[in-house]
Amino acid sequence: MDFGKILQEMFSGVMYLFTLEGLKTLAMFVIAGVLIYLAIKKDYEPALLLPIGFGAILANLPPVFGSAFPSALGEEGFLTVLFNAGIANELFPILIFIAVGAMIDFSPLLKDPSMIFFGAAAQFGIFATFLVSLVLIPIVLPATAGDNDLIMKLASAIGIIGAADGPTTLYVANHFQLKDYMAPISVAAYSYMSLVPVIQPPVIKALTTKKERMIRMDYNEERASKLALILFPIIVTAVAGIIVPMSAPLVGSLMFGNLIRECGVLDRLSKTAQNELANLVTILLGITIGGTMVADKFLRLDTLLILGLGLFAFVFDTAGGVLFAKLLNVFRKKKINPMVGAAGISAFPMSARVIQKMAKDEDPYNFILMQSISANVSGQLGSIVAGGMVITLVTMLLGG
Image 1 (cartoon, rainbow, N blue to C red):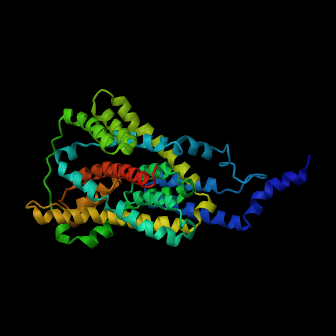
Image 2: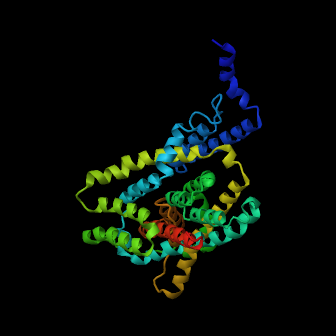
Image 3: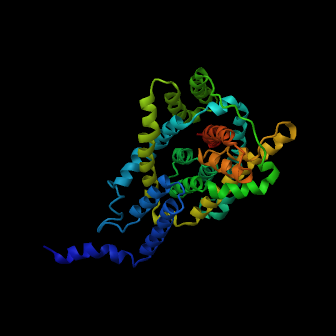
């Protein structure tokens, strides 16, 4: 028995920490610790940030002796298996949307269809950031200069971050095979989803007056008819699939989950989708995303660029919804609370809850939650359709 080799294997991990790569590993441990801290201490979407943080720790452990990867990665590592089984083939985003669809009540939107325009207006940041990214990416990342295909694909995924829609962002990034950029893209998308209560309020307050934030809105509590609720997901799937075919997988899975909820004969499946399916896929998705946060792929200049442009997109999406509401108020006798426009992003239902809290802070008797929910669910649809449009347009421009 070669005791020297055994001791070398035992202490190889410790010695690794004293190398340059080891210092990068320690830096990633700090980043993972911040994500876990935000999840536990600040309660910022703990179901997402905690698995992401823990997955990042697993992905950055010292490599197995004689290998270039830690045991959780590598060809047969369980994080690699999960990535290939759920992200590379786009399965996890599809399953998440089935679960989300089963949670969404489209009745408030059907009672006030005008709210769907906020779901469209709040996607402004996606396209604005796409154009800005086309200019900044080759400047900040000289290595990409001349590679127009990569620049356009990367700009597409970065733009979708602004909708605060993690699954759609992953879907777009994976469609364009941006595996080397998956870590910063996914972390930015899900981090900004969790930071909705931090980012949105200052943007909204900067664009509105106290009087505007105190506007009250009427709401009819009566639900839409059962027939309308059943036909809605079917019609939306058909229309979206015809107009924007690339959106069909995500829109279809979202609407399928909603049809399970509303049909009235699949209560067991509806509850399973809302609970067991949502929880299981969230755990697997989170830890798999964390597993992509390998130091060599994350501690790079392009990570800062993606995080910065993602924040830019998120701010512009929020601002677009608020400004659109203010524009409508110029022509309406019955005013809309402009804060409702900010709920047009895809972060369901976090954004709607933030808007209601802000309204209550200004006026304890102001209740605009249902209007905010309406805008929020339309934003969920809007971001999916926008993602499909981006994929279609970029594919056409690249001649694919």
